[in-house]
Amino acid sequence: MIYLDNHATTPCDPKVIEAMLPFFGETFGNPSSTIHEAGRRADNAVKHARQQVADLIGAKTKEIIFTSGATESNNIAIQGLIKGSNGSRRQIVTTPIEHKALLNQCKVLSKEDWEIVYLPVDRMGTVDLYEAKKLITSNALVVSVQIASNEIGTIQPIGEIAKLTYENGAYFHSDAAQAVGKIPVDVNQMGVDLLSISAHKMYGPKGIGALYVRGGAYAMPIKPLVHGGEQEFNLRSGTLNVPGIVGFGKASELCKEYLVEESEQIGALRDFLEDKLMESVDVQRNGNLENRLSGNCSFTFPGIDAEALIVNMADFAISSGSACTSGAPEPSYVLEAIGLSREEAFSTIRIGLGRFNSNEDIKEFIIELFSSLGKLAGIAP
Ligand SMILES: *Cc1c(COP(=O)(O)O)cnc(C)c1O
Image 1 (cartoon, rainbow, N blue to C red):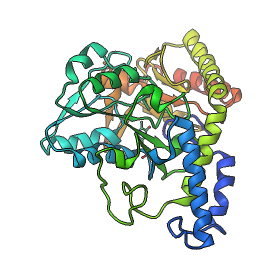
Image 2 (cartoon, protein in one colour):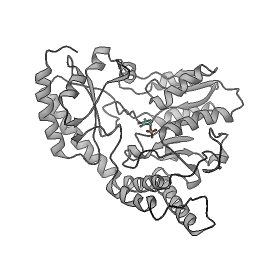
Image 3 (cartoon, helix red, strand yellow):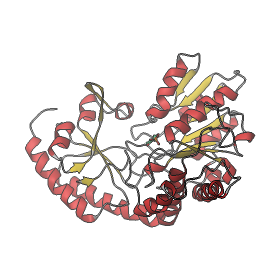
């Protein structure tokens, strides 16, 4: 199988696995039990990893809260701020193209007297700054906009949106699960208060991530959602996932080292693929072609059923522009939000190129794609 679905998850880097292994075995201590040597070893490993993660985003170690991933980080960010607020500001501002880890909690909050304001996005999925200027007001408690889209790769003008947020005295959160490790992310340059990260989107293990909190958890009016042993500056209780944290730290170090060169290499693979496709088949590219993740391709093949195409290409891991949540396929809400019709969404595939993809992978993919498109042409979606 050739893996081309790096937005869903990335394979764990072998160097990350190697770094983690001792922490499943001989170094098993609880980092909270520093009265003895076993606990101190685990604690030192966590301290080192916290530094590695902080270094990747230009943060201080006390600003990194380890969580189970970006879903949990998004929930602590929004609901933690709500718990810490005095209730005078009643709006949560976001976009219609966020990950479900953001949008589904907004749906729940909208039933609890919170008003959700959606910033409109254009045909490329970029937030309309003119509209944002009108919609972000002093009624907002928090504004949450992702750095980069997991579906169409579009990178948002985060600095500008953060500025509008601060002018209105609100907090700014960003879901950076697709951005950290892929593009340079500096929390001070971008000016964010809260930032969600997921290790398994950056060649680390699953089930571990972080929430960056400006100034640390005690400096911000943010309250925990889970209570217990007061780990992670009392914002996220529970015994730390030491192997996961060590792997996340190593993955951060590798991303920092590889980032610039790797994004150029992946971008070159992507350009090669897109050029070949555009010279031979009817294809439309989605997302902001100027400002996007280098590994992202969102392709619409008019008149082609994307599900059938993917089934035909069983040796390749790729994703479609629809979700099958309750039996019946639904077009992706992200593709609908940028103005694609249902038919176009059902004719869309997503490819996510990553660290371990080669030229050879792309060449094989192109051959297989052309052959499958030929077979499917004329079969209506
Ligand atoms: C994968 C992803 C998430 C969820 O992260 P988990 O660590 O799997 O919980 C959230 N937001 C975006 C943009 C993602 O790509």
